[in-house]
Image (cartoon, rainbow, N blue to C red; front, side, top):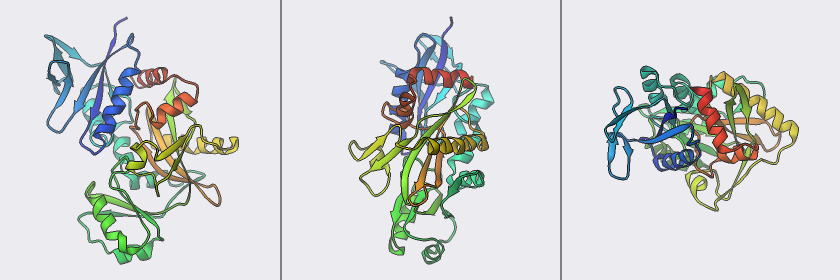
Length: 327
């Protein structure tokens, strides 16, 4: 049987570059070598390259190929694991659509919409059982009156880039005095930011994927951090956060969560694997949607691989099903 040439796209233009590289290493190690011939492609602003022991081979973007040892290799499939732009916001998906190469993620439209936290919240609003925190969206070119913001929302507040990931540029503020600094920090990462009220409760993350033609909800993970919130340091520093998979939740609550996130997946027209972050409100255990991630981290200890193993599946089989389901 002829091997399928898979371009494993990693890197990108955001602060999540190294996270993406770690994801690519784990994916490459867990793709069936008998079925897939994997070529890692590093995406940078000035080049797309495949690194070998001896040199860097440029990608021909005209037909999405490389020439290796005199042989032209055209790719049959792209496995996108670029977190942030251009792999999570629809740009790579649009390019691949134009040249007719299938890929593992949501399409260009859904990727662009879900990268924008405010737009995502607007679309999922109205799903039965799903709530969202009260928020304000700001654009960098507009004037920002912190007093007006403070009078419109209840502290504490989260300030975050609207199109960012891995909590880069995110802050939690308790009064109007810290608001401007947090706004400036978020605008360093994006030209749009989201300011939303803090929801007090237990924080979770849950993976959803279409496997063998069926939407499959993975076991949820509870995020327990010693920090004030689940920021970049909490996500990627050993010992700061404890991730419990599967989360300690009653069967009825798991069923309710699965129904809600399945509707999110359908409402946003998702493909492949995505991850939904949410909070269960402290007093009532109501479901509050935080965001959806359409290219979730895939390092060995990332949440999706944890959840796949907790579901009794092998990561190798899971990635294989993602490829076969989106080819």
